[in-house]
Image (cartoon, rainbow, N blue to C red; front, side, top):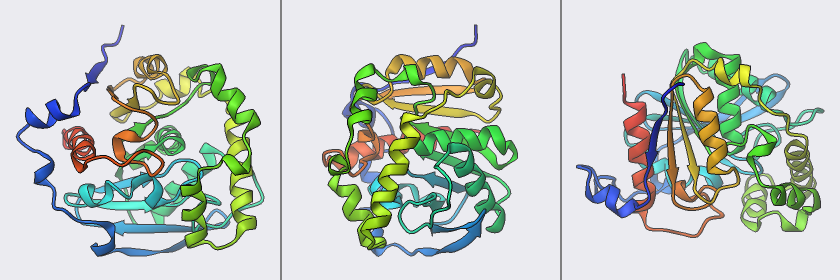
Length: 291
């Protein structure tokens, strides 16, 4: 049986106190005062929005469902950009990116990101995808393996049995009114069109409800080193990500305290001290910096 590197960090403070780096190692900065390059590229029939921060080895950030770059990663971009070039994308129908006359799919998102990297002349990059973005990152590894150096996939749900029955019941009954206000405000701030926002909600809900399991064969085909991160009270159960980690040939696993996205300060989670996000960034950098 394949051995899995399991990293369980039950106490964020303990982690920081017992590492040479600490939250104080990161400058107190925000996205607002960072240099940014942004724009649109035509990929597979849509205009895809992207932002680039920092310099160094490219790290592609892929947001979660219903989100924008900032709602998923706004609290950690200033930390990650200190040592890397961040290429942040917005996927089909999300944020500033246009839509196509087709449902959302992880396969299509993977092809869109791959096309973007080709246009930007990035032959290989590290990837960090959160939630649906994590599913997309793993699809890139499956469909476009040459693009992937190392992959971090946070809070992924690759099989329907990976979430409890209550989750599926909630999604079936979910309404637009229940969509997090933070997501609605963020979308309308960059694309002030309520019809497009309702369209995004419908398409995101449909994708979740018709989730097709990633096959074991496809998961086993991933050759890049992968770090799976999950909250101990996440959408996907810890048992699910442990099972996935046993299928991925070169996999490490970190189970962190908290719910969906708490470890990166995703916008719908309660605000926390910068130290908690910094510890996750330290963990990510330690994984990405390995030869």
